[in-house]
Image 1 (cartoon, rainbow, N blue to C red):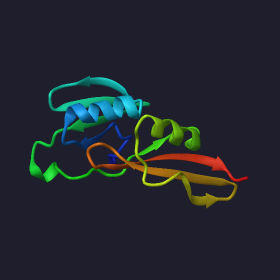
Image 2: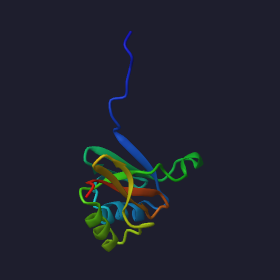
Image 3: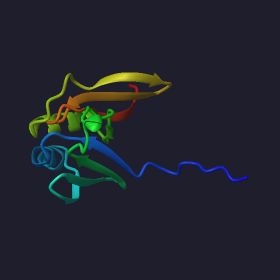
Length: 126
């Protein structure tokens, strides 16, 4: 008997209220590559993972999305760069877990549609 397993995440959907405003935020402020868009959806590439922004078809989908953790190489530099582009963070980057010499750092923000997301980066403890 063969057991079917999930191979990878192909796409993440994020509900939005204003597709034009959301496209601008994800493209201009986060710097993601817009693949294509329609009147109700937009698709971005995030290093092989597709991010779909969409106007909810039904009320049951009109709630905030799961938190998406966007990995960056240097969280302090990215935090400063994204702030300069108008991204509003709830606080500065901070260490959320230490695992031996490695630390995971995060900085949380909201998109223009009320969805909470975060930048994340690993650092070697000094």
